[in-house]
Image (cartoon, rainbow, N blue to C red; front, side, top):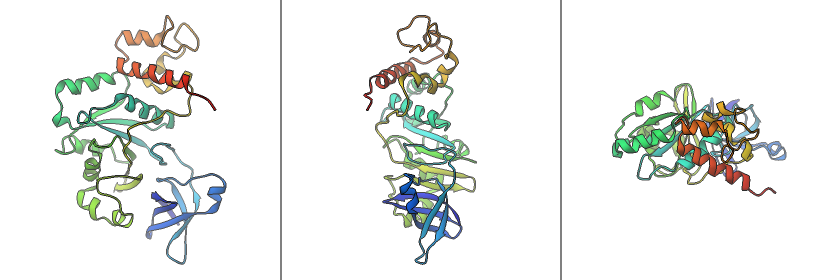
Length: 289
C-alpha cells in the first residue's frame, strides 16, 4: 500500500496510510544504498503480521532539504519575530540561499507585529528590498494576518522553519486547531510535545494542505557551493550575471560592477549586500578536505 512518512524517530518511521498510522522500518537495501527515508517521503509499505509496516520503496522526490531534513516540500515559510527576539537577518539569508539551492519558494513571515513600531517594520522591509521575496507581518497571538497566511497553504506542502521563541508553535496551533494539536491521534501516538519540536513532523491542515513543523535553529550553514556560485542564489543579483566588467567578478572590490551599481541605485538592499560579502568571504576561506 502507499503511504507518506509523517515523522521519523530512532530509525522508526510513522507513516500515514489508508488503514491509519503505521510504525514502519525501512528495508535493509536503503542502508546498503546509503538512502535515508525522510519525513515527507511518499513510500510503498508492506503490512507485517505484528501490525507494523516495512518500507519497501521510496517514490522520486520533488525536492529534498538537508536542513530541515524533509522531502517533497513545495514551499517554505521562514518565521521570525520582529522583536523579542530581534531577527537575525544574516541567518534569514542563509536559510533563503539553501531554499534557492533546493528550488523551494519561500515566504518570509515576521511575527509579533502587535509589539512592533512602524520604524521596525520599515527596517525589515528595507532589509529585503529588491529581493522579490513575499513578506508577511502577523501577530499569531492576536490572530492578525493569520487567516491570510493560512490561505497560502492551500494546495501546498509547506515547511515552517525559524528560530525558537518566535511564536512558531502558536502559528502551528492556529493552522491545525488547538484541540486537534493537543488531542489528535497522530500527536498522541508519536508523543509530540506541545511546545517543543525536537523532530520534523508532517501534519495535515486540510485535504490539500500539509505543513512540516521543524525544530528551531540558531545557526545555519551554507553547504555545497563555492564562493563564485553565491550570486546565483541572490535573486536580485541574477540579472547582473555577465554584465560586470570582469569575468568572475566577486562584486566586492572590482570596478565597473553591475551589482555595486544596483546597490548605489537602491535596487539591492545594503543589508542583503553586506550579508553577501560576509558569506562570500566565509565560503572563500572555508577549508577544503
